Structures are given as C-alpha cells and as structure tokens.
Amino acid sequence: IEKDFHAYHTGKKVAPIMTIFVGGNHEASNHLAEIKYGGWVAPNIYFLGYAGVVRYKGLRIAGISGIYKSQDYTRGRYETPPYDDDSIRSTYHTRRFDVFRLKQVNARNGLRTEKVQPQKGVDIFLSHDWPSGIWNHGDYARLVRSKPFLQDDMRSGRLGSPPLWDILHTLKPAYWFAAHLHCKFAAIVPHVEGTTNTRFLALDKCLPRRDFMQILDIEPEGGVTEEAANDSSLQYDLEWLSIVRGCESLDSTTRGEHVLPNDGNTRSGPSDTDDAHVVAHFEANGRDMRIPPMPDDPTARLATEQSRAFLGGILGIGSVRQTAAAADANEIDLLDDDGGGGEDDADDDNEIPLDDDDDM
Image 1 (cartoon, rainbow, N blue to C red):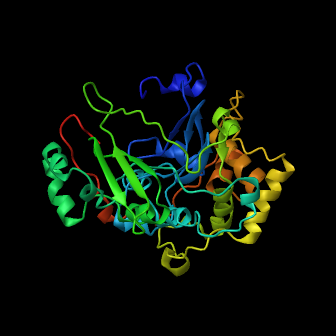
Image 2 (tube, helix red, strand yellow):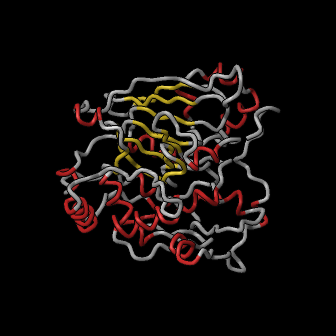
C-alpha cells in the first residue's frame, strides 16, 4: 500500500472493509500527529490516535500507538515538525500519558454514558509493540528458532513494553493483536481471577511467502444486537470521550518529565462533569454516535479540520494546542531552543535489528 496510498487518500481507491490501525515506528509521524485523537487517513481507513477506543458492529476496540523506550516514556509530547534527527524517532515512542488514559477505561460504574451506550469490556486491543513477557505464554521454543537473536533480550526483559503488560492485565481484553517483530506468534494469557483469558496474536511482515494474514470470527462480549451487527459505521466510544475530555488539562508538550496524578497510577475513570458533557452532546444530536466518514471536500478532510471538529464540537475544548495552531494559519510551532533530543537519543535501544529483509 505504500506505493499507492495516495490513491486511497484521494478516494480513487477505497479499502474494501473497515480498516482500523495504530501507529508503529515507520509511519508518517507528522501526519498522524495532526490526528492524535484519531481520524481518517483515507476513506474506510481509520487511525485510532496515540491512544483510542471505538466501537464497530458491537465490538469495543482499543489501542495504543508507538514503541516503548524508557527514557521517553515519562516525557511530554514535545516533538513538532520539522523533526530533527532525534525527535523524528522519539515522536513514535509511547508515552505514560496515553497509558494513563487507557487505564481509566472501565474504572468506574454508574456513568451517565451507560444510559446511552452500554459499558462493556474491551473485545480487541491493538498495539505495534509486544507486551513484555508475552513470549512466556506461547511457543517460546519456536519463537527462538525463528528469531534466535531475540533470546537474550527476552531473558533480560529488554524486549517488549512493560506498560503494555500493565494494560493487558488492567483492561483484560479478549483479543490482543500486535506486530513489530516480523514473525507470527500466538499466546494465551490467563488472568488472576481464572475466568478470562487474553488471546494474543502477532503476525509476520507483509511479504511473499510470509504468514502475515489470519481471519478470525470474534463475538462481542455480551453478544450483539441485530441493529449493531448490520450497522457498517464506525462509532465513538462515549466513556473514552469522557476520559479524553477529563485528561486534556493534564496533557504536556514539554520535553521534561510529564507529571501525572499518583505518578500515573491513579485509576478513577472520568468525572461526573466530563461524563455529563459528553452525554449532553450526544443527546442533543439524537444519540448519533457514528464517526462521520471522511468527507469528499478536500479542505474538510484535512487532519487538522478533523481534529478541530472532534475537540470543539464533541468535547467542547476551545484550545487545541498544536493542532489548532496548524489549522488556523497553516503554521506550526517549532521546537524551543532546548527542545531538541538529547545526546543519549542517538541510539534507540528499543529498535531491534532483524534479518536483512526485515528492516524495521
């Protein structure tokens, strides 16, 4: 798709099925940063954002973008185009803020949003990186035979993302799909209560004679109504919108440590105020929770315009920070003089060299 994506973006070609994706470490980071809350990159191809939750045909789908690097994990999202040699890599490193937001999902009951959209568990979670330790729950020997150079990193705990392992045990999704290491690997992770499991699946790189595709039939938790099953539209998740609204004031665009409540370990869910605002918006709009499809008007389909509509119209947030600045006058905020990457950013310890045809 990298050679003809422009045809999908303009609508000359259309993805035949709804496609939902998260970012990894080889996307156009500058474009995805403009729709960091989620948005369309082409008709029928939807980016979940740095972190996000949506619903489709009764399934609750969550995800997080990027790969883990410890020294960037607690920083704010300071990177803005034009990227330098350091920030062009650090911009796709996962941040604690996004993990914090995801851990608020299903943290409390009795939300007003439940009256409009039933609260339920996460059916599918998407990530690029692997949760740390996931290899202990699948065919470890086969994985080592396939990628022997990963064994030392697995033994030392350097491979994978510790925050994703935390999310896995917090949200307990039924399925977890990942990528990054260019090999097929399946695992089943049991949860402490012993009544639920998370089924993990990573697939290989999209190349000839590689195992990069698998088709699964997934039944939504609690079943699905006939109306939802027949609705082909992508829908907002109202609890997630409440969480995004409530966390917006905690966001940071500085390179320093991003301070969060209780060091990011608080799990309280959205406030009554944010919950009520989101419900009021959708009640006023006939409870239409469908995410508007990518518009035909070239101006309206701009990433910045999608973000403006999302933040201003749905969440009622007046300041859109970097996104608003870009949308208002086609201007971008440059890095401060001290906003570049540090000298220790040059070698990315989490970018693992694979075999010759697996350039990550």
